[in-house]
Image (cartoon, helix red, strand yellow):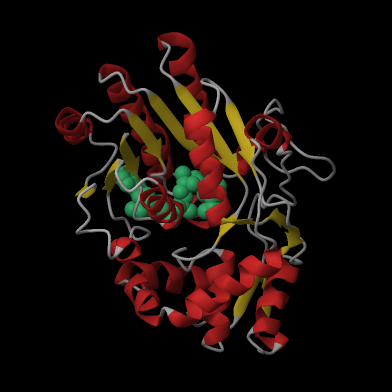
Length: 340
Ligand SMILES: NC(=O)c1ccc[n+]([C@@H]2O[C@H](COP(=O)([O-])OP(=O)(O)OC[C@H]3O[C@@H](n4cnc5c(N)ncnc54)[C@H](O)[C@@H]3O)[C@@H](O)[C@H]2O)c1
């Protein structure tokens, strides 16, 4: 295989490249990443010298540069992880989300068609379905996004499907629940909580902390993505989740208990506008069609994750860029918190 991975310097993309490289050491992987604040070359340290791995710094929205990439490398498979991915940032400004998550995808789709790519896998999210208080969304459920982030991902999914229906491009979509594990940028709930707890800093909790997410250990997602890529039915969507439905409050308390930190670090702040109460996916299709199920319980996954962040201080430092500090200083001030 000759795989073009976009956004491979981010959280899930880098975990996937490690997973893929280990499983198929002789398949070629070209990682194209713009290296936004969330992209970190440190995530792939050790792979740079591998013969079958290459990195190119590029923006998927730049059609000219991306055409050059396709022309030179002729990928047979495209997996698109590249995205603006943080809901809070989409609340502050939607424009970068629309650009990368929608226009960037259109560039990749056009080129994939032109260069006769054999499989185009779009990495989507459970957030496209919106909130559900009882039951679970299946792949046939109505889409009903709440945030500008979720809306941009929904638009991308629709475009991907349209290239299948209109042009016959062999596409696949995965929609996963919240991932956690190594290399996640410390703006998301789990790494943020671990890092703040380790530094005895306040941990912000939106609203009453009772919002429910279904936590998926990132390595389980990588295995699922690989299965969909190799054996998924063209033109279809696959839900992926961890079967670990937990409130944010529970997750934070569990991390504090493991690190033996005091609950007084928890600080309730005003709720995020449009904050979905509960996400829940049915993963029966993955189980039935591809024999996949999540292997990592939250108890096992969270301990591995906390231990990883506790041991990777150098990596943590590499994420604390000026841009990161600037955004969070402003954002935390808005929330009524003073430090980050
Ligand atoms: N993290 C989750 O829990 C989760 C859950 C469901 C779905 N997803 C989806 O999975 C994908 C990966 O998420 P993540 O958490 O790894 O995100 P991330 O923010 O950690 O990484 C995104 C990567 O994309 C790169 N990127 C951004 N804009 C780009 C552009 N214009 N051109 C090239 N590269 C660009 C960034 O530099 C970064 O390396 C996203 O599409 C996201 O919507 C994430």
